[in-house]
Length: 499
Image (cartoon, rainbow, N blue to C red):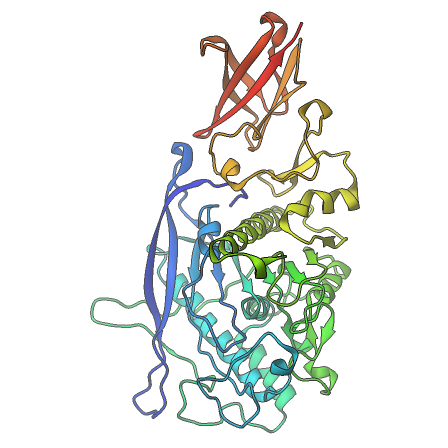
């Protein structure tokens, strides 16, 4: 697990993990599907690990829309060393409050559409999705050969409803969700129709056949961290902000949250979500409140706010004026940034290294990350460029002679190994003495070569990352190219030698 691209290739396949069909029921749901992404080769001839960290990514859509097909997020995680699974979960609730769950009920991104629904129907949808997610996790854990999951490194999350569902998975097992219904719904039965496999939270069945029997893993499991993309946790009764080691799902999971300051769907602090005017038992804990509770009791938490964004437009400033391809590129850029930060955060949670930032990082776009960091912590450490193998932040030195703008962000192509003059820094430049080499990787040293203007090799050796590389006083004045190879990636930069 790393914020760098370490996977050279991966497989992608769609499987069925649960049947929601009961022969005794007149109303059935579809079979639930998952798309699984599994690394098949590592970059730089690195040996394949026996097990992989696992993340279950969950679709957004207000519990009315979405399925196992997700763009951008799964690929970004699998390329960074995860075994990734997306999933269907049963959808639908009475959004318009007319007493029926209709196919055209839509959970729009406007305030009126969020405040007309039936709250008990919504709570059923959340509990039903939690039950389906439990089935998905247990089906993967049941087959350790097909899904080599490191059970000590399991994570979940997603955007919007996916972030909310991820929080519910981490902070409450199925039994606790059933207890939540009892506390909120009082005497209203959870199962409205004893024979409705689609909308009532009746558990689905494991996939079994004569040749295949996935089944469901029966033991406990633990979620170590959540990527919360502009979601919230419904029902404070689910989350004990203090230490909790008695539940099947301990409440010690770390949370990394990204949200919009003007979010009217899942408000940043505390709100009733879709249901204003209800009592505090229906409170939803937004990203800011969850962050406060995590820090208050010593748990891992980080939080990133786009101050002007509404619900779906976090880090997508100006997307309404972009073409389809430009908008897709911006969403992909957002996914890359969020996944990198989540990977560093998850790593620090596992390694026990400092995993929290007390401050909120305020950013209008992903290119503001360095400036957001500088505003809170200054430029003493240098430019934040990712994290080390233990999850602690890594920095690149700032040096005026490199004309490096502290707010400049390196391209994703650079971090994925394409040749770029920005990825390998040479200090000082121009130079007439010792030259330091700095590149964006965790390696302590790597071989390099210095080529003159005619492409002839004039120096070679092994450079120490962020340390001594070579002595330019041995070279004549002129322009030279420095090539460095590390873990199958070639880094390139030019240096001017001036005596």
